[in-house]
Image (cartoon, rainbow, N blue to C red; front, side):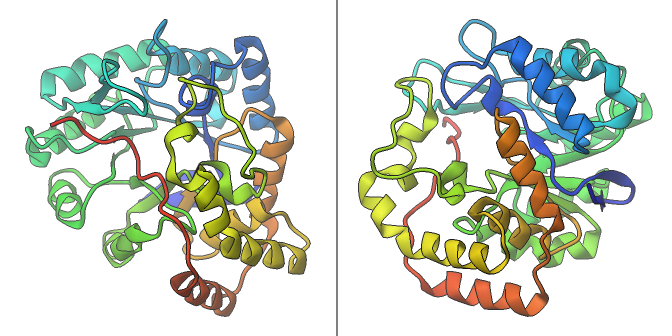
Length: 331
């Protein structure tokens, strides 16, 4: 697979793998043995960026995803880059999608990094994201702790998820950011306003939910069912019957492009993204080897600047529904 650079020097595959759905948010947790084999095959197929977090798990074990990733990938540690995150926990007393409770106090970060290192069975984290900005802790204080952790060798790069331009600039002054991790897809383009800042500061963009939680694969319809209580898609606006209809013009566009490029809708959605900027890395999640191969195939689909501009113009004009914007922070 092709490679690209995040920030100054973090080389990764141009399409990564989001591991959350193996343990959290998309139905009951997958079989650990099957996912261990799946992750090993992902490495063999060229994936080198694997994204997890300390809170990706279930009620039995809130840290199960880090444990899975650590165990499955320890034999390939020198070939891969591991991304994990700190700074939130889920308020499970509320309905799903569970609200988030932020906590980025220095002492909490210290506890989190030690826990993640142990669960991931590694001596360093390649890219450590603040999962959400904590309004109670100045970002400069968080950045200072990140600088200390880099000096100590416990992490090598850091970033912020769902940050504003102001927060990015303030953090970067204290300890340079390697990347941000934000929601980004054909249905969720509001973070494009950050692109000039990211280019100016040489900060990469790791894009989560690049397929709008699966809708842009064109594999779902009004009759699609999701596991009750454990699958966030039950409460995502883009999957309601009314909005499936509303999004048909978008899906028709992607189908047309897919036919023209001898590709699939998912591949077009990913190729659109990685063709835009050389520092954008999507991390679609899947549990299926066939879907992984399909996603990786987007790396070989080229869209010209003119084609991207034409697609963006259409996206600006066609109707589409709201899209899930992420779990909210509790006040």
